[in-house]
Structure formats: C-alpha cells, structure tokens
Image (tube, rainbow, N blue to C red; front, side, top):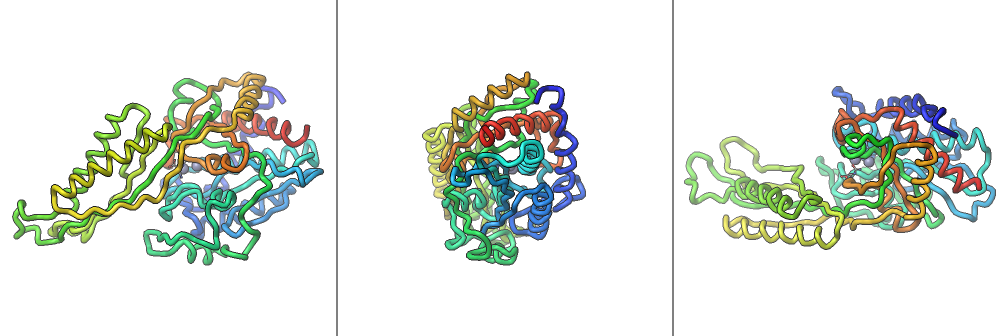
Amino acid sequence: MNLANMGHFASDIMSFIDKLSGYGADLAGGVTRLLYSPAWVQAQHELQAMMESSGLVTLFDDAGNLFGRLEGDDPADGVILTGSHIDTVRCGGKYDGAFGVGAGLIALSHLRAHHGKPKRTLEVVSFAEEEGSRFPLAYWGSGNVIGHYDVFHVPEVYDADGIGLADAMQAAGFGPGKKRPAKRTDIRTFIELHIEQGVILERERYTVGIVDGIVGQRRFTFEVKGEANHAGTTPMIWRRDALAGACEMIHSVETLAVAFGESTVATVGQLELSPNISNVIPGLAKFTLDSRHADKSKLEALCEAIVTRFQAIAADRDLELSTTEWMNAEPVLMNPELTQKLAQLCSSKGLRYRSLFSGAGHDAQMMQKVCKAAMLFVPSRNGVSHSHLEYTEPEALSAAIAVLIELLYDLAYR
Ligand SMILES: NC(=O)NC(NC(N)=O)C(=O)[O-]
Ligand SMILES: [Zn+2]
Ligand SMILES: [Zn+2]
C-alpha cells in the first residue's frame, strides 16, 4: 500500500458516515443518538447488518456493545480489537465515534477480502456508550468490557426524564443474560481511530495525529438550595437566591481554571433551575462541572480549590450545597510500542503526522487498563466537535484507515 491508493477508502467511509448519521439525524445536520434510544437501537442493528454483509460474525453483549469478528487460525491467541462508540451527545456531529467504528469495519472487510483468514483474531466494536450524555456516567460500553461496570449491578442513575439506566437497557433489549456476558479477558490490543475534536492538526496542517495520552477528567453535579419566594415582596438583603449563588460559583470556576494555567480546563455545561419562573426567586440551582488536566495531582488540586470556593460562597449566602462526583477518570498514556509502530507506518507512507495529547475522553482510556491501546486522530475542521458542524476531509479519513489496515495486518497476519 502506498500514497497512490491513500484516497482509496474515502468514498467507503463517507458513505458509511452518511448512512449511520441517518439514525438520530436532526434538521440542522447533526445527530442525537443517546444510549438505548430508538435511534441508537436502530443504528446498532444497521451496523450489525453491515458487519454481516462484510463477512464478519456478529455478537451483541449484555450491555449492547456490538462486535464483528474475523476469526484467526489460533483463537487462543486473543483478540486484536478496533472500533469506537456510536452514541452521541445531544445535537452532536456525524464523525465523533462513528468514524472509528466505520474505519474498523472498512479495515476488517478489506483485510478479509485481500488477505483472507488472519493468524490472530480481529474484531471491530461499536461500543454502546462513551459520551456520558444521557445518564450521569460515561464509558458504559467499554467499561462493561473491561469489568469496570457490570450489567448485573447497574448504577442507580437517571436520565433527564427520570428513566433509570437499568430500565432503559431492558427496554432496548439488553441486560443480564440477554446476550453474551460483556466482560472480556481475551482482548490483547485495542486501536481506536477518532476525530481530533481540536484545532492542532488542522492549524499545523497535519494529516493524522498519534495520541500519546489522554487527560484525566472529573465530573460533578452540584445542588445549591436556597429559598423560593416572591420576586416583588422579598427585599434583596433577605433573599436566599440559589441562582445568584450558583452564578458566583460558576464565575469562580472560570477564574480558578485560568489561574491554574494553560492546560487546565473546567466547564459548567448544564444548569437547571427550580421553580424557573420569572417572578419567583430561584429556590434551587443544579449544575454540572467538567474539569480536565493531564496531570492527576493538578486536577485534584483544581477540584479541591473549586469545591472549597463553592463552600465559602454557599456559607456566605446562607445556601445549602450538595456535591456529587460521578466521574473520575485518571490521565493515561497510550502503549509506546504501538504509538511507535504507528509513527513508523505514517512516515513510511509519507504522511504528515505529529503526536499529541487528547483533551477529550475516549474508550481507549478504559481499554488500556486491560490491553495495549493506541489511538490515531484525524483533523477536525475549525477544531469543531460535538456540533453539527463537525467535518473532516475524506482524504484524511482515508489515510488514517490505510494506516489502520497496515497496523492490523502487521499485528494479525505476520
Ligand atoms: N471524545 C469525546 O468527545 N469524549 C467525551 N466524552 C467522554 N466521556 O470523555 C468528552 O467529553 O471528552
Ligand atoms: Zn467520541
Ligand atoms: Zn464525543
């Protein structure tokens, strides 16, 4: 394989992405495919059909992860896995997650067609959930595969409509004993292709990026309780305004994150008010915090500083503050042997590549706990992701797939 056929997979991947984006499509051109929603269920079944028509043996597990398998001569050797997730954020883009799943499918079907049965088993996975956007929990798909989560002990979490995770899972046709047990001990390698979701590769004109590591991430929900009361008759000094307190807290998040230095990010992305009426002082404000850093101790210090500040603000305004931390993912490094291999493949193909750290969370960070894991990024136009404006040039998608194919060939056929 050389530069001449690098564009080879462009039309395959574009038609895959177009097809999948039909499930959960919105009018703006984006996609909403929340875990276990009807659009998600349909998309997983469509994928199953695509995998089967590519000659792969398909399997769902109890959590709803979908695998397409190309068995090797010696199945006892373990599995080389590639893929990503198909859930999206609300009003997300067509490429986040979908690209990695499509790339894996195209790679396996190419390898099968051109090289036949591998020595070692190859699988492509469409993980059930990565985003943490329906329920306050993330990596439910890969988390079940590595045994971090378990469908027999589903966390008691609820979506915005009050539906529990266990009920949503059952309604979608999954759950304990419904399919194959989710936990795997036979996966040796995981390779994930993904859009960068940032501006580095595009600004510096690289075709692909090799991921060195992934930032740590902690997410919280805070509830600020004051007193709902009449907006016209309650003097300013006697109010316990939950929103006014929350605003001060949210502003302090920005100030503290900036003070912690350039690679620190912290975001309040969700806010709910009660009673949320124009002439009533808010009695309750509930908001989330997403904080990230590549250095675990810096991330801890940041979160501690934020919570301490919140407590002081609450005390000052006579508000009650409750804190729930629902995600704590440590920063991780990708497997150096695989990143080196990827670098060699990229240079032998004459691709412009660089290594970089991921500011976004990925299934690869879960998988690296149980196997060798690596990631390859492609540029995101204007650095935009989690938006209907997400876009990557088909040539870059195709080049990354060509690299994936060579890596998988190396790992499974030699
Ligand atoms: N690649 C992602 O968009 N991941 C997102 N989701 C998780 N779970 O990290 C995120 O917020 O970074
Ligand atoms: Zn993603
Ligand atoms: Zn995402």
